[in-house]
Image (cartoon, rainbow, N blue to C red; front, side, top):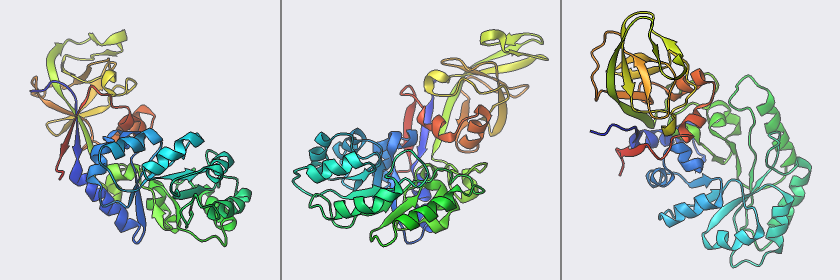
Length: 360
């Protein structure tokens, strides 16, 4: 019996969530976002199970090359584009598509001598102020790239929302209006919607949607959980109890004596800690699941272990513990920590075993 953490990846849930994207954004093509190791779920394995997506999105060239090396032939889009003109021949050789978001990239494409043209997604900065061409430069950039033999005909038009997770914020409507104004008259497929916009802003769906977090069963909207959107959690992080201890009233537990028993109780020691990616700063009372019941974490999370107050429950070494996932939403744990689910999912370390269940 393994006494180490396991991340169970539910492939059927992953496929269900992709189907849910298609249901919500009917008629749109789907660019499934696999960056950051598929949000911590295992990039190649996830790609193999999401063959019904129309294309994959990654952040960087090395991610795309890893997918190609793993046998993935589906279109792949570099969401950060390329960083140096020297990368263009590799992009062509690997049949990759690129997001173009600054003038230096445009200049490099126009000046390059390429063996084949590249598919370009031209990004406008409508208010995120991270990547993207200024709106007033967008039309000229589109025309220059459209006339270049180094670009596949049919430039795709895109932008990215800053606040789509907040349905009360007016910024998304303003960004939509800005995009419409400055792209007026340009032909090409449009891609604006990330996961939050897929769910919350149907007017943004365009030709392509770019789901990321929602594919993994997690809500991208503030204050919501995945099941409220018909999503299913893909990752369930589990470990085991390795010891059970009796603690007298007044005794303290863990580093810094950060928790003190108010009465005689029993503690279960669980084999997981920040060395595995479980957040060190969870507060006392953060729940875990055992036997279908919630029990509170007490004391500080250490590198390899944490402790749980089990009261008078009958828990023995070897008992399975769910840290988040099925029955315990990662959104809830993230809120208690004061972070976002993205960070928790992406922070799982190589010490954790990944098990893929229900796949092809």
